[in-house]
Image (tube, rainbow, N blue to C red; front, side, top):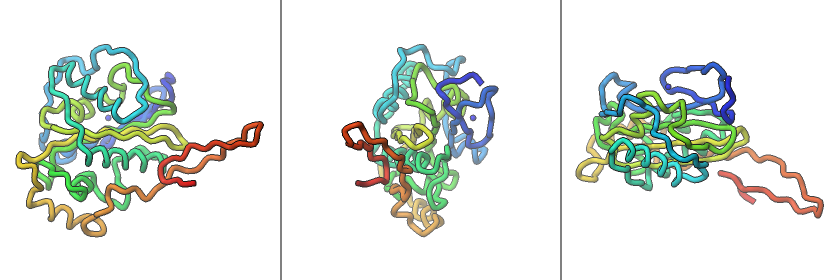
Length: 246
């Protein structure tokens, strides 16, 4: 919300569940579930699983977005438009999870997802006191995610809502590799009709830790460095990960 499936582990934001084999972590975060107010509309077919698609390994954020939009199209919905700020928020969250080894919706410093989007200048629609029209799906896997339909942990109503809600207009995604595996984040949201920030945004930002939270989209974490074994000729190759430098 233990049959080995590429060692993917899921963690629900609202309810911690352990599947029979304990191999997946996932999470879905939407204000409707937190506030008790139905903030998003969702009218999926009776079967929540995606229609069969050829298997594809998700190696980039664009591929993850394509997978989500193909899912929407299969349900007769319009694809979501990629938004730079949602790309930034999703990537920073994936990086944060990779650096900490936790599958979480929490942001560094205690800032909320809504406050992060507003601080980055996203003109978020909906009642901001309830979080606005935004949602997020997250998961981790031991190896690269293979998309052959919606991942099992994203097939419940809350996770499907993140990808299929007709209220959302835009999408962003992030992928990061840490010492404990791969981390994925899908952020969806709706912009205001005017394309401008709501007046109440300043109030929401005023309650953010540290004030306006101008650095909300900049992760202060780094993926732990792993020791690379030298080749027979003495050369050492290291893939520079998030937050690292040579």
